[in-house]
Image 1 (tube, rainbow, N blue to C red):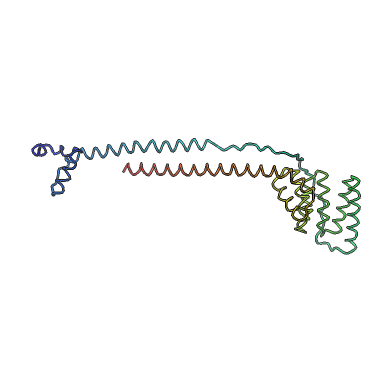
Image 2 (image 1 turned 60 degrees about the vertical axis):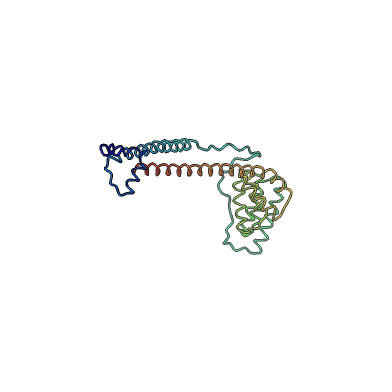
Length: 264
């Protein structure tokens, strides 16, 4: 065997004789390059196999990523109940000038105009009621109740945008105007803004509850809950989709790093 190794040192390169090579090296022996030829070739083969195994993994991750990118989340329709109206696109109604000084005479005249508006309203004369309330607002632009009352008339006229403008004006003057929140909530419900309507009506109910608010809430709240549940569902699906995307990216980078290491 020794004579064979002398004549052909490549015999020692057989992987099964690696223990013998290591023993000779531990004794200080210097072996010729031929004694390592097969061992190096075997290591290269193993490296090639590892790289071959790693490449399909990288390709698999990339394929999954491409498939996921094509899988867009399409939201389903929400079945809502309740009637809505077309938005009114009339020019904004006349508002009062907040810089005007309100005297006692103007305040009394404003109250008189409001009484006339209530009388017209009881007779179903909505346009006349609007005219009288506009007069009352002009005389006393600092009165939240005047704006809120005109907002309720606009709700009866199915002009939700005009009602919202007046309700906003009332709430700017008096943030605790129950009538302002109520009329705005009713107007928003007419526009199908169910969640916003529910919020306004709940505030109005807390400030000054009446049966009409309770009746409207019974119609508005189910739609608001459906919309909230729908949004939460698809927010969760999008979050899960994003987490899967991040996980695939980590796997791809890990596979590429492994491939890069093996290629060295």
